[in-house]
Amino acid sequence: MEKILQVSHLSKKYHTLKEEIEALKDINFSVSRGEFISIVGPSGCGKSTILSIIDGLFEKSSGEIKMSDNISISYMLQDDCLLPFRTILDNCLIGLEVTGNLTSESRQYVIHLLKTYGLEKFMDQYPKHLSGGMRQRCALIRTLATKPDILLLDEATSALDYQTSLAISDDIYQIIKKEGKTAIMVTHDISQAISMSDRIIVLTKRPAIVKKVYELSFDSHLTPIQRRKTKDFSSYYDQIWRDLDVHI
Amino acid sequence: MFTYSEEHNQFIKQYKRKKRTILFFRILILFTILVGWEFLVQKNMINSFLFSSPSRIVTTLLSLLQNGELFCHIGITIFEVLLSFIATFLFSFIIATILWSNDTIARIIDPYITIINSLPKVALGPLIIIWVGASIYSIICMAFMISFFVTVLTIYQGFISINHNYITMLQSFGANKWQIFTKIIFPSSFDSIISSLKINISMSLIGVIMGELLVSKNGLGYLIMYGSQVFQIDLVITGVFLLGIISSLMYFILVLFEKKFFN
Image (tube, rainbow over all chains, first blue to last red; front, side, top):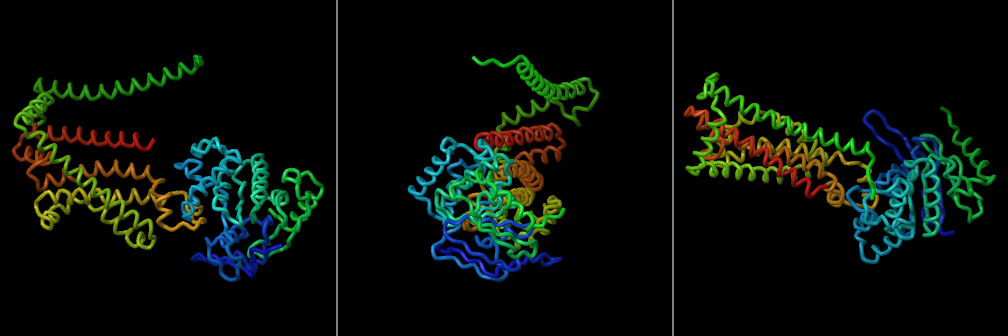
């Protein structure tokens, strides 16, 4: 498969006046078109930093990030970040406004996405009228609006309660597959990673390196919730749990 | 048809009763003060020459109205207040925007703003007159000095207290500073802008009156100053009374403006 993103020897140090923190030491992985990759690791190990660097929000300290030509990236944060003074539709259009791609055509595309994913009724309402799950779906549509090739998902469901998180994971998974997007997801939730990904990258604690990579072999038409019911699911869970070596 | 439960009706009733009670006592206090004041004066328990009285205020108002001075003074004062209000707001907004856009500048200037803000501006009155001249400009200058720094700080605080995730979200689309300002910062800080306007309008009034006390030949500040110089306490109290009315009117206009546009 066509490799569209190659991360090699990526490292990142944070500086404060008192100390220097080495967050990422030597991160290597590549992403192929259409893949769903999850990055898991102990909390505070710099998982989110990787996404921020790929998106260009943070400078890297060293290493290389190679992307194929004309690959666009869009970032979905943990917080839905819906602006309270904009309607749902206007919130979803903000990325197009910023990038200068707001045309009647792209607008129609966003309306089409809202319709497809059940938010049509709420288009002209404000975020406060939406439930947490719907807000997250709206944030996903805002992320999709600029037609990115790669989606970066940063703890995309951890602001939600557990049941909603399961349902929204299912939604997000299906939307991403249906739209044929590539995704890199950062999560602290091992079971969410197993239920959604094609591949899981396990990081060590700080300074992070790649500890292990799992190619998951689930039947391709299983949804995340269905995956959770399979036998493989719990064996993957055990292995990754051991890799993370959680001590309290 | 849908009807509310008895409990709900009770709740509404209690709410309304409380509202009526508050209004009643507000009026009662004003009424007591006015009547008590008048009563004490009528019974010669306090000196009407030194303390004036409600009836004398009315007489003074009427005479000012008859010789046409009343609206002249009020008009001049309101004109000066509005002028300094608008000037202060525009400048403060621009300066707050600059401070927001450049953290280095903000931190360089910060101690200066704090120090100048804490100076008693009246002390600078004579200097202002010397530098600017004894004219309406000194009055505007005085009002500007008094309200400018507080307004800058209020607006700036509003700008920097915005949820940083919103900014990250916009940056992830590659937004520049100007886009972040127009799409997030400005629309999110209406609340702080409104509260800065409220502060600004009363500060402008205070500043204008202080300026008028120092230099002017018209306006309510002048009226008060003149009254005290010729020992016409009626004039002084009437001036203060008019000021109270004007400042509450301005405040209410702002509240109406806020309700109309931001709710």
